[in-house]
Amino acid sequence: MNYVIYDFETTGKEARYDQPIQFAAALVDEKFNVLETFNERCRLRDGVIPSPKALLITKAQIDSLKNEQSYYELMRKVYHKLQSWSPAIFFGFNNIIFDDELLRHNFYQSLLNPYITTSNENSRVDLWKITCALAPLELDIIKIPKNSKTGKNALSLEALSKENNIEHKLAHDALSDVMATMELAKIIQEKDPLFWETCLKARSLKTCADFLKSEEYFFCAPQASSSLKYTPISLLTVNPNDNKELAFFDLNHDPEQHLETRVSGITSLIQSRQRVIRIIKGNRFPIMLNKDYLKNVDCFKELANNTLFAERAKKISSAENFIENINQSLVDRWEENETSKVPSDNLEEQLYGGPRLNPDDQEKIKEFNNSTEPITKLKASSKIDDFRYKQHANRVMYEEYPDELTTRQKQKHQKIIAEKALSENKDVKWMTIPKAKKILDSVKEDEKYQKQKDYISQIEDYIKLEENKYKKYCN
Image (cartoon, rainbow, N blue to C red; front, side):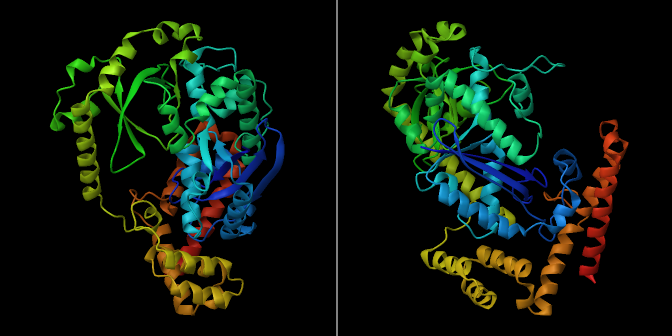
């Protein structure tokens, strides 16, 4: 199956409120030969305030924030390109935590399928997680850079590229990051294809479930660059109410001490510092290696040859009452979590947890997206029943086809946009004008940014222009 490697440059770190300013991707075959690339930018949506620090990292030209193609035009192009490249295995560098979430939320806000990377035979992996899994093995596959101050592993794409002589001239340019990610993945696959293929078994719920049936226990890879431990674990059960939530027993512990634990005590086994029971999300690329692989790794031979783990895994698998109690505890936790959720008033935060789109609305949204005439699009937007998607459709009309709206309708949008952009509430999750101005004041005093004084002045001028625009909206 082909791979799609992708990366964003964005206005900030908040996936629900920030937006891409550049999207780049490469379609490659199983040997990482490039078949096609995509690289485009867009201007900012009305009301989106870029973080000055994000701009100082990406060094985006201020003119491009105002004059590139529209955000919605870019998102449609991205969607159709990824659709045309499917089915594929999608990945980036730290994409599970950030890029995938940003992609989902921006597709959601553009009335496009948010789950394109995990539906219709598509799946996803994360090269950052693969490097976290690789680093403790001390194999001659890639060189692992160290932080000069702490001596710990430095697993940033920039540091890994430099250490492994991978060309990465424009760090934080999306296409440059894509190509560096591709070259790093290629080295790992070529030098240890078994490790690479084993990691890929966690790329989807189905492949992960199939892999877990192949052995009594596994060794869970570290989930952070600061950790060097592989943990022996045995699958206990899957949450009956959430098939993404997998419960494992940590085989470092003696199961005999816990098999009589009642439902009320299971939670403490999950939440304790020892984490006797470990909850792992099967849809977030949980890398696990089997004992046969680790037996060939010098620094983990002793761990892999420990026969105690097999004995403990066998005891766990036959402990029906214990597993039944865990199932009940997982259901109770799930129900408690569901009932305690407080729905957000902010449209941007309503992707997860909201009602599923019914088939009628799916057809109406398809009609809206396929309409080429503005007046037809306006009529289609009015037919959508789901409040969230109706509001997103209205926002598309405001941004893309303002001439189809009445003056009153445009003013209503502008007032909402201005109130959010000018908010003095420092606790809101999106970037505001007051927040941006405060950040600019701090970076102007920071020695780290002294060589970028001219660019800081450009950002400051841009923020002032945006502030004046939103103040006019209020009037």
